[in-house]
Length: 89
Image 1 (spheres, helix red, strand yellow):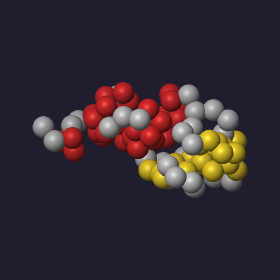
Image 2 (tube, one colour):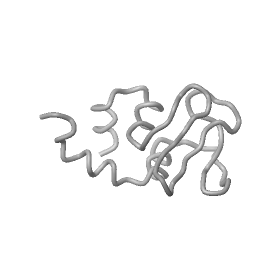
Image 3 (cartoon, helix red, strand yellow):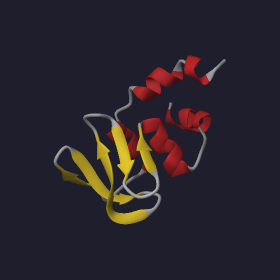
């Protein structure tokens, strides 16, 4: 079965990114407009990382990049897509 055919994929994508961040234990984020902003859980800094809950994405303005909740799990845990999917759902 291909990953895009995995029924858990829809379930994982339905989890709000804020819940994903909480499950990962990402702390130190503060509200700033429509985003939560703070240090990147991987590369640090002070305010280079943000989560936009309305759009459902994160972004690191340094080197880590951005994406959805599954990509956030991959980044923080250092795992591949299948492992991130298994961890999340």
